[in-house]
Image (cartoon, rainbow, N blue to C red; front, top):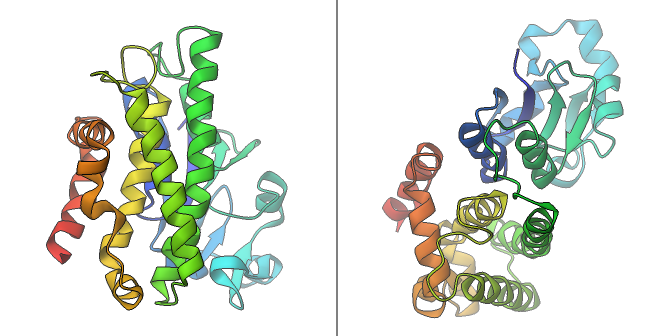
Length: 264
């Protein structure tokens, strides 16, 4: 039995945080899900599965009205799912027995790391762990503005104020990461890859979606932030490239980043 189970739309770089931590730490992890638009045809539960495998009675009892990304659409979330996941969102993680729900990607990653066989993934002492938490908290702030920006681009309705906030968020985040790697560090905290590095790499991988949504930027007379990121933040981008090619990251990062390179 897996030590942690995750249900999410796929592919999802934020889920990769837990996947990579599990791979490095030797934790048994199970991921279930489908493409974002297909989750309307799934039962949201610890035992998440396609509706074709669900009885009519079970489906009727779980019917809800979606919101945020599924606004106005029917979803099927069990009562048990909503007890474990009070915000009703994905990615949704569970303890191996399904009794405890964990939400938000950084917390899911932490849950995996706390079970890891390898020491150091979450720091070697309380201060290193707290410094890692600092990077994870900053990443949440960046991730919030980045998500608003990427969603606006998806609908080709990118407003100038949203772009300006994304510009500030990206610059602030990448400047801090670049500075933390001075003069030639190979990890954000300590001497080896930790949750801080995993989170940074996954958030920046997700941000690569801006490269596939350039029509909205053209309308504003702007270019993708990533176009000149290597000149502006050389240490941060070199660290991202190094992590993307690491065997623990490459199974997910390779195909995902190649897709954007081909589209351009």
